Each structure stands twice: as C-alpha cells, then as structure tokens.
Length: 148
Ligand code: NI
Image (cartoon, rainbow, N blue to C red; front, side, top):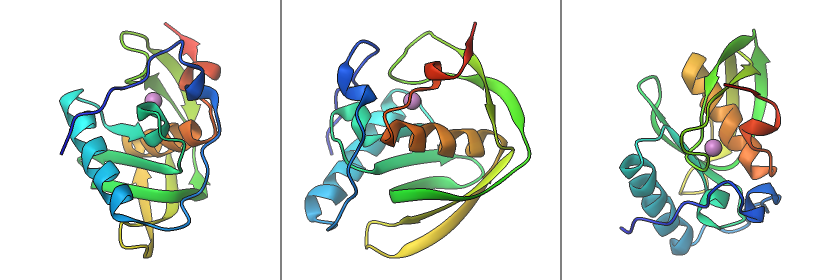
C-alpha cells in the first residue's frame, strides 16, 4: 500500500466530472487500498478518487455505523429527512461550513469484485456518502455550504 497525495483547494481537477469504472482491474483494487491508507493517515471519514487525481467514480466512506465501505460507480437511490451540520473536506484543510443534507441515504454501488450492493447510512454516514458522491460530479462542499 502507498499513501497518495491529496489534491488541495485550488486544484482544478477537483471540479472535473469523474468517469464510470467499466472494468474493475487489479489497478482499481490497488487504488482502493491506497485510498484507504491515505484517508486513514489524514484522519478522514471519506475520500473520492478525484481527490488523489484519478477521475474515476470510486470513493470510500468509513464510519462507526458502516465500517469501511468501498464504492464503485455509486448512486444515491433513496434520501429521507434533512440535516444541517458542519462539514469539512481533506482537500480543504481547516475549512468548515454548514451544509444541508438528507438525514438518511441509501447508496447502490459495486464492490471491488464488481458485485452490486446497497448500503444505508444516517447522520454522519449520510453526509459522507453525499459529500463523496458530490466529489465524483466535481462538486465540493464549499459550493453549497455556509462557511464558518
Ligand atoms: Ni471532500
């Protein structure tokens, strides 16, 4: 495993749209491993591939509620409730703002073996799913947060 460099605020790549993963190769699996190491080293609860310069629809979320979840081609298929809470991002160290997010979301994605699965998260986990999937569309939390 290797720790990767996380792109920071002024990097234009963060605003690009990531492409779907057609074929889950060993390279994708290595990327997932490296992303997990990178996220944990930075003490984050989520990371999108675009943040390490790979424009593919791949993200991780790690919380107490769901453990480590690897998301390939994730789509939010259900949203319920509303929460307003403070969010940050490993690409914007030291910056925080209030966002409006669903209280609970269900995500459908593929795992590293290409199998489809669904995962539901509430509160922090729901925020993390939304935040990471936004990254895949070139959207960062600062685009819609009330910054502190
Ligand atoms: Ni982020």
